[in-house]
Image 1 (cartoon, rainbow, N blue to C red):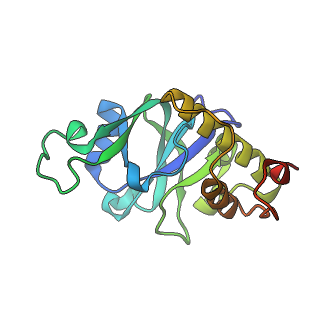
Image 2 (image 1 turned 30 degrees about the horizontal axis):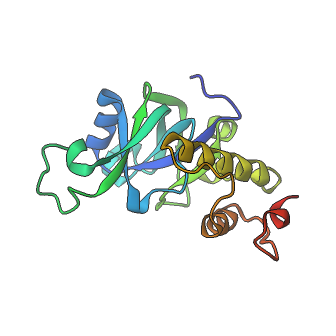
Length: 193
């Protein structure tokens, strides 16, 4: 596994065997735009498997390098479901490298319901349980900066304005997720340490 300690990893959900098969055989994963995390420009996706996976349930067993992403409608991704209620909604199609089994499963001993979780390659490779993926408080600022940079790179990828400043609502959500102190004002000078 070529996962580097400094790689940015997004833990995503696999709810159905079909989703694992798509990732393994076709090399992509989908996330609805309306529920996507703010930054999907990561180095790796790790996959949390739900109760649908029997013996592999409630654990992270697989990860794959991210090769790129694009927006498509659900029906463009899943041609066999033209009548699905969200058929015409936009989804991120995240192109993946080879799906790899982790050296050991990372079980959810206390957590069962997850949405998305950012972590690092170092934490993913050393974690004994999902709680170990939480970035320690001393490293949260580094993760915060990496997410901001990736957000800007993602905007550039789509030809959007690549202003390195995140919108205030995105900064607020990320600060809450990373448990960073809230600045007294929302000016860029107030967010630098």
